[in-house]
Length: 411
Image (cartoon, rainbow, N blue to C red; front, side):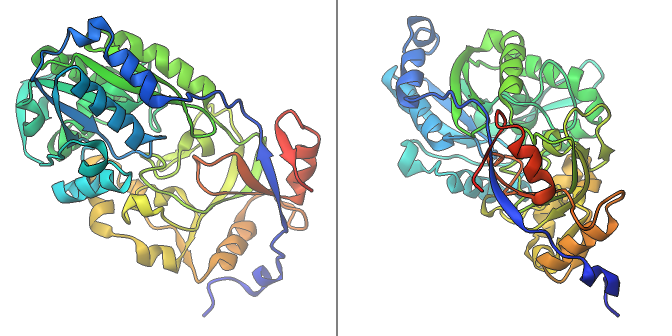
């Protein structure tokens, strides 16, 4: 028995047109120079004693120029006489397996050979305190034994909650550095607790261990490094909200009011913790975001996983339809470990599976409410990070042509 009704095969998949979305592209031209200048500033230099061992924390996100930022940080630490090493700090990612976490950062080019520092990966943690509500605070054991800890993190909006502190240095301390044990325990409290919990756990970390500074990366809409900020440990909790405001002002978006079908070519943990960013789609695994200011997206089709996600399909549950080939590429262990640790099993649910891309798109068109099947509003993107070069159907092409301040049309 066929999955699609016969009438679905009468639906004509619309022709798609190449369009560029227009966003400012102010970016940092010399990352090495900017980081070295800040690390060798007398105040920062004086914060680390020569010969000190430094655990440099690197996460699993696809941060722009991550390997260059990490190498520049390592080089700067060596210039001031420190002995840095890399600690993968990504909570439960990589299936909660130390070897896989090393492979994830190596996949971004953060290798021992390139950055000039050894990678030391373990899932062993130690409990250092409890929060005010009695939640144990875990820290990676290897990092805890270093003289100094320096996180490298991107400052950006979180996919599941809104607060002055979202994704960045403090979250890396609370979630990433807590490894699988700490990550899963904090997520048991639910995302609604994170606006208070993340800063509290970060503050405990800062009080127990020495964080002379962190490397905070802010990206622009073009996925380029807009700026890199060396933030002193004592300013993590006060400076991060300022950087988050800057980051949000630079975020890309889909500049439409309504999209019948959004086709996403790739999802992955390097794209977003949610696989595809709800701040772009307006949809979380638990449902639509209340008060979302972006386009109303009726149906989502997911067509693949990024290589960098290592078959972790967390977030596939946000899609309405996907293909059997995508399903066959999923590593259930990595995916389910991440979804369970983050307290978000909905993110691992499997959408309706179709034989191929065309059938998946037809199913989305067939089921999208209040749609003109003769002229549907369809947008195709590579991922929720890649929003400059997109494809649109004829129904949205006219909108783009009428808003040349927001779009460049090649037809």
